[in-house]
Length: 181
Image 1 (cartoon, helix red, strand yellow):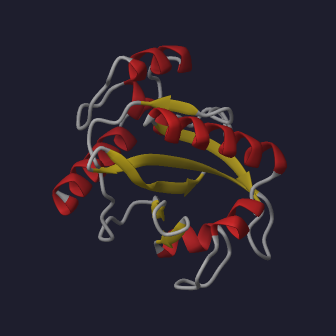
Image 2 (cartoon, rainbow, N blue to C red):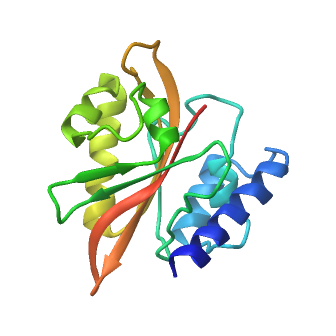
């Protein structure tokens, strides 16, 4: 499941990135996501991920119901960095090198989730907390544009994709992708 679904996710990202960002409006994307748009089909959800017209067009978040346990591939050479948050191990974070770069940290350094959350600007931290809690309560994934203050660098906007991962019908971790906008 891991490599196969990771490559399917990477394929969707590559296909959508190659398309022009003239897809449906956010309202249309939200409606379609609620009706169960599935990967690897390129649909309104994927269009929302790659929207470029506004650096914080998803600053209030975008919820969707996932249909797969998608895992990122460490081999993916896109501009997305992979991350995971293990809910069963006190929200332990695992980041790819690209996510460390986004936050201005050396790769491999142990990162505490509480510290990472403080790097989000107040308005983005509030949106992140609200959408994360709702997503966990309702078994949803989400996309959020957030402003962060990396260690030793100027503030920047990032796009966060979060997907719940299930074991025995329970969410055990969130994982996904982050990239700079």
